[in-house]
Amino acid sequence: MSRALSVDLRVRVLGAVAAGATHREAAERFGVSAASVSRWRKRERDQGDPRPGRLGGDRRSDRIEAHHDAVMAALGCQTARNIAPRSASNLDPLMG
Image (cartoon, rainbow, N blue to C red; front, side, top):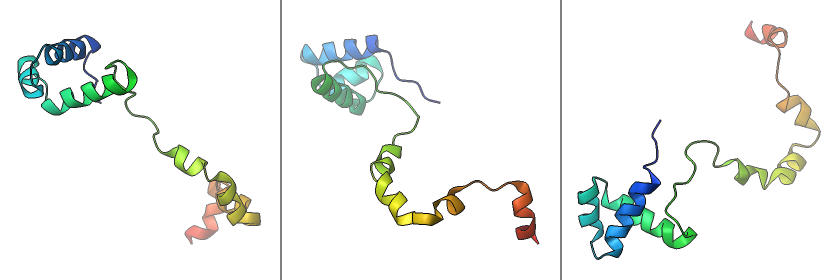
């Protein structure tokens, strides 16, 4: 799994940009990509510091959870039958 680069490095890179270096110059000097410099600068502008966001984990379940009531209403009385986990004994007749 990848790791975010240190906050110290981000601060030094952004300091070089603030001192007049272009994104490409700062990137080359510190061994990072110019795209990373741009992202860190945007993050610093948007949230006040260049700290990395969370890595990994669930990033999309909130989309479906926002529609929970509509999904459950559409499933109606079949909810328990369709969503309930099946045990191995319930699957035997299906396996033939």
